[in-house]
Image 1 (cartoon, helix red, strand yellow):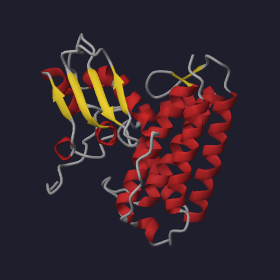
Image 2 (cartoon, rainbow, N blue to C red; image 1 turned 30 degrees about the horizontal axis):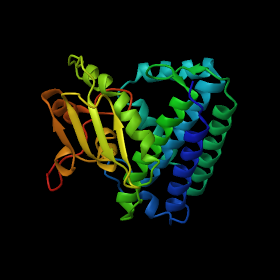
Image 3 (cartoon, rainbow, N blue to C red; image 1 turned 135 degrees about the horizontal axis):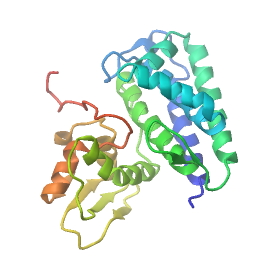
Length: 264
């Protein structure tokens, strides 16, 4: 079973990097719009705080988490936006403090989780390592939105390896959530990491292949950039279709981002 410590350490580092980006913002800059329609910088941080809280409940109080799932089922199209909206109403200093406190609670809970334990979620149950990976993916993705709003650049790091692995593992989910048949054969995925290391997945002799920069793959599977704007290459019809529908997050397919220069 996977030791969650490495990904938990990387989750902390990813969160701290985003924290540094927003810690000294003026109240006005918290209200800047981000690429997610209707979401400001405050909404992005509020969403992370809300999801950290839900994750901590899943680990520490599964009855309370079940009640949160009931709320989600009662308002499937609104519950994510509602959580972000509620948090974004807080003064920035309160929102920032709540996000910091919540992610510490979650980190502590996951580090203390019994080996082999699995926790409920809005999708399939997750291990401590899987939950930490999902939180790192979301933190990085929403961090991209915040950075875009602020005109900043978050330099890619080898922490992207966790998101790449999650994106590869969710291939079948992406096909299924679009109502498509799951490819029978594994794909070969070869991606160049930020440190110029080649990260590989799947059999070397696979017919369908995906190659390119790891950063671009992460932007694709988190739907932070349109495929047309990324240097990813697909060989094989199924791999090509995957790059049109890939998503590393649970839930229904997102609308994604339009190509650069396109008008929504």
